[in-house]
Each structure stands twice: as C-alpha cells, then as structure tokens.
View (cartoon, rainbow, N blue to C red):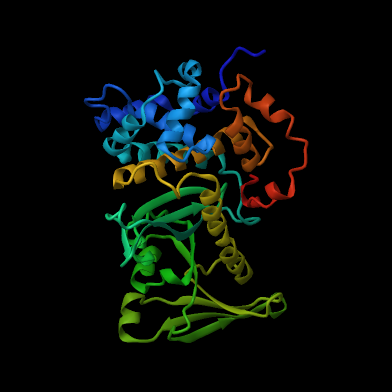
Length: 389
C-alpha cells in the first residue's frame, strides 16, 4: 500500500501557500485567532466542495470520523460547527477573493494556448449574470422581491478554458448593465454580452478603452444606415452595415458609427441583429463569437450542479461571499491541477473520483488511471462538454 500523501493533500499542494500567507498577513486575517486560521478554513471549505458537504453538522461529523487523517489534511483537529460558524462570520471574505484571483491569473497563463475560434488570437470574454434565490428572513441583507432574497453572480468568463476572470457578487436588485461600470477592461479583448447590457454611454466607454464588444441589438433601436459592405448571403449574412444612432441623447452617448450585422440562422430561420464596434473581423466571425456567449450559461449551470453555492453554511453576507469565493478558488485549483498534470479525464470525472477518495493515499494519476480509458455513461456525458478541456 502507498504510504504517501492523501489525494486531498496532493490537491492542496497546488495552492500557493506562501502567497496566501502574505494575503492573510496583509489583511491581518488571523489577528486574535486561536482555534481555526484562515488557511485552515480554506482547507475545510475546499474539502466541503470536493466531498459535497452541505452543512456545518455534516462537515463536523465527516471530519470527526476521520480524525487520525486530519494531520495529513493540514488540520490540527476536527473543528466544532460553532467554531466553523464563527470563522465564516469573522474571516474577511476578501482574503479568499484575493486567493481566487491569484489562482485565476495562474490558470489563465496555463490555458493561454487555447483558441476560442480558429485564427483568432484575441482574448474573448463572455459577460452575464445568474441569480441564486435565498430566504428573505435569513438573508435580509440581500433583498430581491417583497417575499424573496437573492444574490447575483455577475461573471466575466474567459472562454479560453472557461475560467472566470471577474466575479461581482451583488444583491438581486442590481441591474446587469451597471456591472460595466466596475468591469476590468483590457485593450484589444472582445467582450460578448446579450442585449441586456446595451447602454450606449457605457459601451462607448468600452470602445474608448480600446476593447471590442459584440452584442444583440434591441428591437427598439433607432439608427440610420451610413453605408453597406458586401454580405455573404449564402452564409446567412443578410447585410453588413455601418450605422449611426438617431436621437439627440443616443448620438451624444455614442457619437461614432456602429457596425450592424443582420444574420439569418439556416437551422431555425430566425433573424438576429448583432452590434459591434469591431470593423476588422468578418461578419461570420462576429456571429460565431456571439454564439460562443452560450458558454457562460453552461458555466452557470455547471457550477450550480457541482459546486456548493446554492446552500450556504452561514447566513451573513461575509459567510456567503467567503463560501462562494472558496468554491471558485477550488474550481480553478482543480482546473490548474488538471492542466499541469496533463489529466485527460473530464473535470466531471475528476471531481467525482476526488469526492470519494480524498483520504486515499494514492497518487492522483494512479487514482484516475483506471478511468481514463473507460467511456463515461450517459449521465456523465451530459455534464457540459464545455469542461472537457
């Protein structure tokens, strides 16, 4: 029998602990802490994500049943659920946000060689939000409806590797378009979003920052054609035009020309109208880029199915944000591990094996070796092929 490290310990080796220690020290995250440090809390939250623990009592019972193995997890002892609850409320969520962003930067470098579309070197982001419903009596800090609370995850997804580049957590009342005011903009990158983000003033700010956007036009759009380019009707492109907005305020908010592409889907016969400020790419590529936006919807569906972000271990705003950022950090950590070790199994298969084997003292590649050549059943095959990167 292998007497080496547990699978969980091997996963935790990919966490940049020195960087994490500096993050904790910079924010005085462990000031006055005696029982459960910020690093130990992250280990426990990562453990709960990998093993599908959904309550403090569940975590306490599971860790208590494996007390002799906790040393190999980096824990001194099994914490009581009251200790976990206090830690979730008192440890600043920004610590785990900073860790997640550090891991995201590392993952982005690893997946930089992946292309969203052939012969397209630019970085492509998909922007959207998803709502997580909550109980108003327990989460009164996140009002949404008169009888319901909710939070929104405004997410900017890097389509190279499906790695979230930016996440803003707000209450359910925040209008999606307002996230453009705080979005980190990279010159030369392409931002794909639906028509809920159309605000000409904000889009012009994106244009002035040197970035490109691709979105759908609203039905109420009022614009006049300036000139038309040749359109490939055989490929579904009805027209490719430069337009100028009508209306005093619209022209003031976006004083330059926009590119309008009318596309007819040959499969559904549905006509779509796209808006962009990119005049270099051909019309078919613009249409294909908007189709890639669907990957952010798959990302939301995937994380809601496989990460513990719909049931929370605490009810305070700090506890909720801590759990969400720890979940994102765990997800990105597994993506990093998968890429660096060259693991061929899908992310779904990888997580399923870890969920039942975290205490096994087996090398990760050996633990996955028996499953790499097997065909996944129909259930696994339906778990978002987007993540078979």
